[in-house]
Each structure stands twice: as C-alpha cells, then as structure tokens.
Amino acid sequence: MIRVGIGYDSHRFVPGRALVLGGITIPHSHGLAGHSDADAVAHALTDAILGAAAAGNIGRLFPDTDPRWKNADSMELLRSAHELVRARGLGLQQADLTIIAEQPKLDPHLGAMAAALAGRLGVTAAEVSVKAKTNEGMGFVGRGEGVVVIAVATLEAR
Image (cartoon, rainbow, N blue to C red; front, side, top):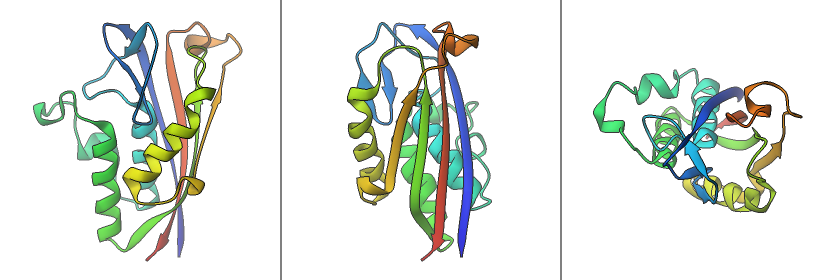
C-alpha cells in the first residue's frame, strides 16, 4: 500500500530570531515567527507525513496552546510524528519539498537540509528532495515578509 500526503506551512519574518529551515540555521537578518522554532520546512513535512497516514496534523499533535512546545525543536516534532506513523505500520518512502522565499538565497543550504531531514527520519538523503523558488516579487513572500513551504510525502506499508 502506498499513501501520499501534502503539507503546507507559512511563517512571517520577525527580527531577533534565528532562521531555521530543514533543521539548518541559515544566516539572515530575520527569523520566522512561531511558537516552536518556526521551522516551516519541518512543519510542512510533518503535515505531509501525518496527512498520508490520515493521522491529523502538526497542530493537533503539538498545539501552540501547550507550553511544552514553546521553542520546541521542529525536527524533533517531525521525528516524533514519523514514529507515530511507523507505529501504524507505515514508513517514509520519499519526500519532495519546495521552499518559496525571496531572501535569503537558499540554494547553498538545500543539500544540508535534505541530509538533516533524512537523518531525523532514518532514510537516505536520496529519498528527500528539497528545492527553493522565489515568488517573483508577488504577494507577501515576494515582498520578503515570510516563507512558504509545500511538501509531499509518500508512505508505504512496512
């Protein structure tokens, strides 16, 4: 059995926080607003994995109203969600992610993000694709106000 899930996340930029994407700290003047570390890449992939398993979403598992998740490591939340899915007999076959941001330039960090995500999920980096695009100056992303991430995950019975 093969199951497919789609994840989406967006966060606005704020001063005074580190920019963490895919478990990697990226040099930039701003970070992302959020209850946890606001890693939009990890959040989108978490939702894609949970969606493929019909297991809810990141907000249901790790609600931002719960102080336990304040400044949480989103890569650890991703690992926990994947463990829940694995307990249901499903495992990640592959993931494809697109990060949409005008700044900073993410190409130099994409390989490290794929490796970090794969390592946290117990798969090889060849099974995780991370790409970056701009929004060609359109909308809140195009104005440099934030980041959007879209993720697709394929799970298979294990």
